[in-house]
Image (cartoon, rainbow, N blue to C red):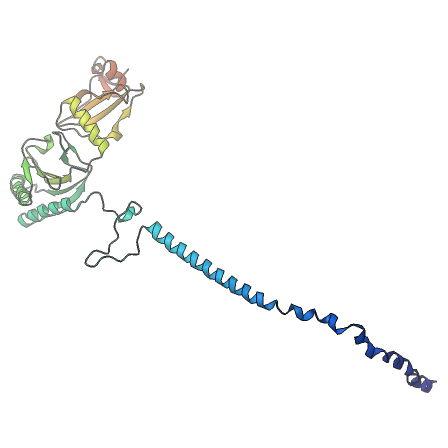
Length: 330
């Protein structure tokens, strides 16, 4: 049985032969002309090449546009130009409102420092004791186009002190300091300005607006210099207003010292005068300042009356009826 089973496939071989006869006819059933449309797709590659070229061109133009915009933005926001500096000229950037860091400083301390350094050197060369230089909180200046003196907001100072020979120090130091100032174009102004300066002389250099004074009456010897611009406009306006109502040629005051009274809307301020504190008040922030009094101590409570009492309400005073310290009552 096994042998017959092995012989079975050769007996059935005629069956596949019958199927193989029509096989060659299969390709004839589909006419060749109907397959021709396939080659018609050949023109498509040409537009594809053109499309790629257009894309590359547009990409290139886009890159150029972005680069140009970036360059324009850089020069616009920096305020610089790409033009070369003219030959023989400066290549420095011209200050512009858009470049505040490149603008010139409004004021310069160098001239003031220079004159103080020269006074310092003159004193150091002629005295056994070394002078000292410092930066102060202000010195006397004259407000331009007025006859009113006030205190600047900073100064450069030089001080010399010899406790063993005070008289000689003051006399000799005065001569050396005055010589330096006059040799550098300063002109002396007559008149006593500050009580604590004594008979000090003011010196002024008009082309630079620098004021210097040197103390000639009491130790230690001090030379101090400031510029007439070293005061704020608000301080200047306040000083001129106070000086006018008090009929004074020297007033030092700062707007930050204006105090609101507990009785609204009264205000008060204490300014510095020649030899005393100067007390002023006004009934409202929009009204004119009024001069009250100049004093070096505590006032009597009875001195404060009417508007003055309202402006200085709560301030310390001396009650002469009880002989005790008290406060101003409105």
